[in-house]
Length: 166
Image (cartoon, rainbow, N blue to C red; front, side):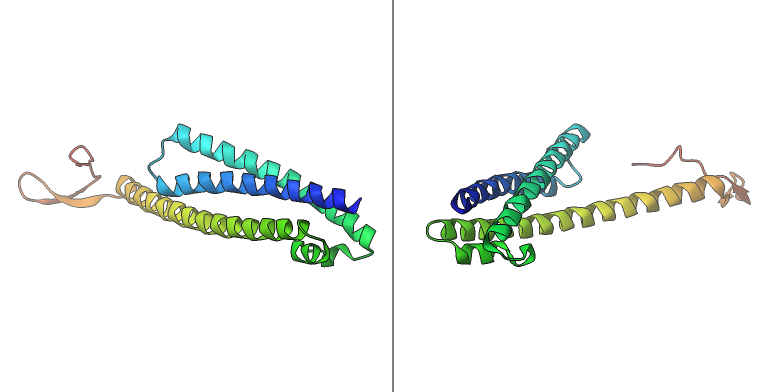
């Protein structure tokens, strides 16, 4: 059971690596085209990310089932069986495979976190700019401003946007 479970664990981890790489690629594209991607392309990227995340969660549940089975076989608490601890207990070549999977996953996860933070910050900045623009428009619509008549007299009136240039 143990060698079979370990081989299956490596297979699951390789699939997680593939899915994380796909997610990273989508986030890199999103970051590179930040604010310039058309809505249909953005929706397609969002759907791919959502499906990749669903699959990652499904694989993670399977991975945890395998780790629980290993913990039972080895008489260890499941909380102590992290990937590094498992790799330290298994023979070659599985130990090297598990270490490779761990390093690659950690690299992917760190890059994904950085990209997600960057795109989230950029989105928040764009939203703040939109909110500020809407506040200016709302103020202009609901308030009167002092203007000058053709005769040069000051008067109060609602603003007109007909001469506003883009």
